[in-house]
Structure formats: C-alpha cells, structure tokens
Length: 248
Image (cartoon, rainbow, N blue to C red; front, side):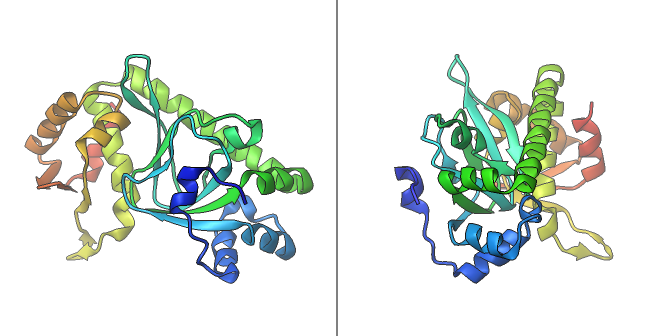
C-alpha cells in the first residue's frame, strides 16, 4: 500500500481484518460487494481515528488514498488568491473523500480537516481504481455519491455567496450541532443542550468570513439566547431558532 509521507505518519493498521470488514459493512457505498470482495477491500484498508481539527490531508498532497467517512464530519478547505482559507464542503458518514486526486493521478485540490472527532476507512488508490474497474455496481454507486457531493458543494457555495455572515455562521454551527447531537443525553424527557468545543478560526473558515465577523455573530446569537458559552465550549440552547437563522 502506498501512502504519502503525511498519511504514513498517522496510519496504523492495528485493527484486525474482521473488525475492518464490520466497519466496511456500515458503508452504503460498499453494500453491493460480495463477501469475498468485501474481504478483499478490508484487507487493503486501514482505519484512522482523528480528533477535531486533525488534518486528514493537505492541499497539494499526492492523492495516494481515498477515505470513507464512518463517523463524524470533515471540512474541505481551500486557500483563496488573497490568502484566506474558506470551506468548500463538508463530508459526513457514508461520504467519500479524495476520489478526484486518486482517479486522476493529480494532487489534492483542497485540505481536509476533521470538524469533529471522526473515524475513517482508508483505501489505497490502486485498490480503489481496481474496484471501480471490476465491480460495475460499485462504480455506479460511487458516481452517484460523487454527483450528490458535487451538488452539495455547489449549494454550499451559493449559500456563501448570498447569505449574511450571521446566517452563514448559524449554518456552520448547525452542521456542528447535528454532528454532535448523538452524544447528547435527555434531560427531563427533552433533549439536553448540544455542547461541543468551538474553534473560532475553524468556524470562520466554515462560514467563509473573518474571525472578527464570527465573533460579532456569536455575540448576537448569545444575546438572543440561542447559544451559551463557557471557555471554548458552546451550548446550543435553541436549535429550531438556530436552524431558522441559518435558512435566512
């Protein structure tokens, strides 16, 4: 298996093959594979677990692997001509990352950074291309997923172009809230506030704005009782209202 130097430094194929087969079965993209094909894939994969803000790959890296997102969320970030970093997409459970560089033999066109703690299944580019050629059903499923992701990226770009800073900040917070919602317990029969650690620089990149603008938007949301914060941790107190602002 060939991975670039950054990937080699953080990958460790310690999970047994049977465990990786169980992980692979969770992916809709691999549902059409036979048991032997699934084992063939699992034997060539590595699991990768990341903390929030860990880098999956950098813009400009060689594309030696593709990544299936098992859990959590990953932001795709790109440097603009002015030197700003902006979000161009977000990938969640079931999504595929790194396919463009792997299929075209080019370098990464964006950076991928964990937005939340996440788990990935990593497959080397040669095995990925071999699978596309040998299993027509897999190829069709991958193309459909890629088309959906491209559409989501276009919609995200359109939102960034037309929405206010407040709406974009609310949208970025909503994505983080949804990614962390499964970790929140019930309180008195109702969902407890959704809490997570927040990095304002990362939030600004997701909202395609500056840290100063994000700071003003956060103050607005706190003053309206939608958010509360303590140190680097925020709590979403009114998810429906946050969603309404995100759609403004």
